[in-house]
Image (cartoon, rainbow, N blue to C red; front, side, top):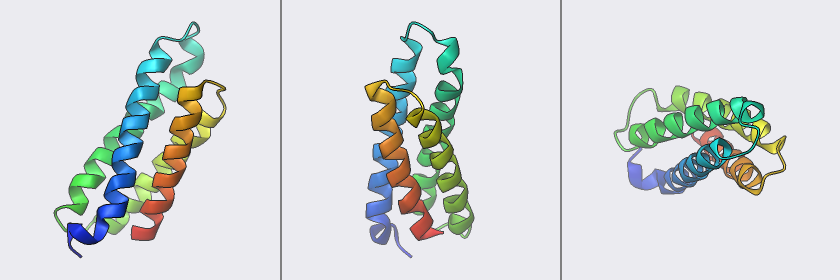
Length: 108
């Protein structure tokens, strides 16, 4: 499958990367950074796996399906953590993560 056929997934991955990076940065500026520790960690991990998976989709890797499953799992974990926090950046990140997870499941 060519990367052109994955444009919707790649777009969801890019939106998730942006949301996670914004959330990561905003969490570091919160008053109680310690309380945001898991959110920060998952933001970083999610952005990293989404970035890698977007590259994989552009190269027709034979491991795309397995990486799609892993990416969906990490996106869901990040979304679930972000959803626990009332900050607007966390809520937006959670939404982007859940949309990305669904897009990845379609590839898996």
